[in-house]
Length: 191
Image 1 (tube, rainbow, N blue to C red):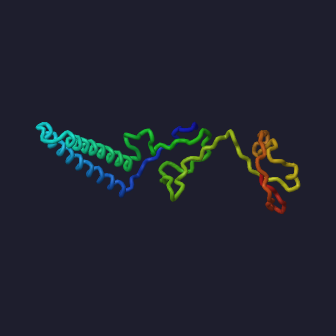
Image 2 (cartoon, rainbow, N blue to C red):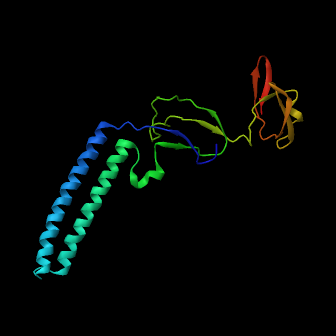
C-alpha cells in the first residue's frame, strides 16, 4: 500500500446521547433562524420607510446571517454524529481509514463486522491493520558471551534467517546489550 491509500472503511454507530443533543441543536438553530428572519422582515420595512438607521438594519441583517450559519453548522454536526462525516468535510472522512506509511500490510487483526474504538486520551483505539516498510528491517537476536568480544557497534554483517537459508541480508550492527541474559545455561547478549 502507499501512504494515504484507503485500507478500510468503518460504519459509525451513533451514540444516542450525542445524537439527540445534535438533533436538539438543529431544532434550536432553526427556531433562532425563523425569529431572525421575522426580525429582518420588520427591520427591512422600517428601513425602507427611513424609520431605522442603516446601522440598526445592518445589525439585524448580520444576526440573520449568523442564524443561517448556525443552522448549517448544527446540520453538519448532526451528520458527523449520525454518519461519521458531513458534506462540508467529506474529504477528511473519519469512516475511511488510510495508511500512514507506504509498505506491506502485515496483519489485519479485525474482521468485517467487528466493533472498533476511536483513539482518545483513555485508550489507544483499535488497530485496523499493521503496515510495515520492508526496506528497513530490524533484526533482534542474541549472541553467546564467547563471541560478543569480536563484535563492534556499526560493523557490517550478513544475516541468515533459519527459514530462508539461501538468502543473506546485509546489515549494520546498531546495538549490543551491556548485560548478558542467561538462556538455557549460557550467557547471551541481546543484539
